[in-house]
Image 1 (cartoon, rainbow, N blue to C red):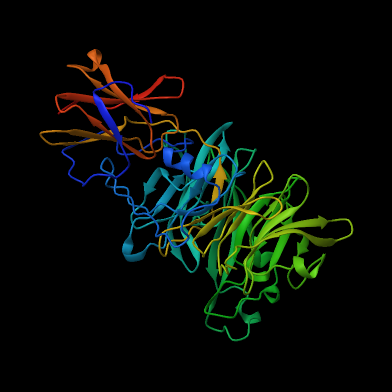
Image 2: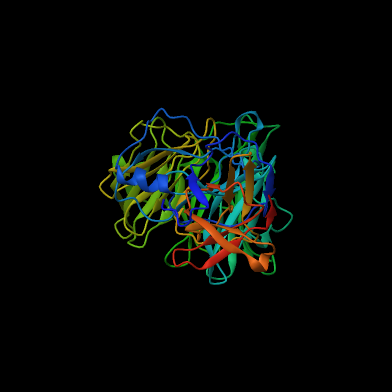
Length: 495
């Protein structure tokens, strides 16, 4: 990392000094980064690397001590990994440790964190909203294996654009929030009811969870469609053991098919249902007790999540399995009603995720897998080679994970922390979420209008440190992009 002026003695590696910050200034949060740190570039040049036994890193940032979601530890990294950032929503933290939404770079370096105390975040990703990329997620609490909460749409500066609630006095569930090209959102919800109990032996005093989904007009909040599993799926199709609050279906994904009808994944019937969007009637069943398709033996899935139609007509699904979880690509012949396995991606550790998980086919053909209840995220080549593997912090899980290109803009200024002694001045800078800064410039002057550059260092991850002349009495730090254009400047601090 070359230095331009002598007033900057040298750049400091992240978190290299004892924490004794004297001054902190800047925005509390907001911004995102597609830029690899210097450490990222070094690691990438090494091919497969890293100690698999390495402990997940708990960040201790001088500039943002409030951000404490552990970064995932990348244990495998090979050439050929797809571009873009990883979108995670770690939760289930031990001892009430921090959890929330997180964007990370290719080697796990945090780019943006949004902790949500006492709440769970799921399905954090980028979708299209009003023709532009936007962040979306669910937040709330978990009850009976479902969510009670709402959905957020945010812009490229991480400012909320809309809050979406389930209609008809329902609670928004954690399993799906899908924006459509109709200006609507498809979301899951559920209702605990005693309806149809007389048909269930052994549940005379119990209740059934009626799995539901809605299509909501985002602008008005009007319910355009509300679908009930008890109207369409017989309880005899369930594999789930009888219990007091019987979750006989458990919907966990909704997909708009090529003909604008819907594909819905039901974990507890081991079935992907194709539904008529207007009437809600079942067009066909793939898998389960009443399958309309003949599945090859290696294409059978159970307790599955995240059924998605791909552009070539195949269907991807995360097969949670009874003992081994797999990311599957299925060739589905709807005319002959036959299904064969095209590809199966298995973690080298033979993971079994008892719940959650997703499969994402990336633009270049690689396959990104979120392992759900197992704290791992992986990327495979089309041939099945493991290109990237990362482990979340201890006991954390992420319902889904994604790899998506993203460009974020800070809504506030960069945050600066200063540590000073008689012989040295160390400055640290970060900008939560920024994706544009390539270099940080140290500035001094008597007012914000009279600032001049006294040094510059390359950005080195979430937080960058630099050693400055102890003679400086005022300091601001400016971020510039790869072309040298200013993208953000901190407050001017009296040192």
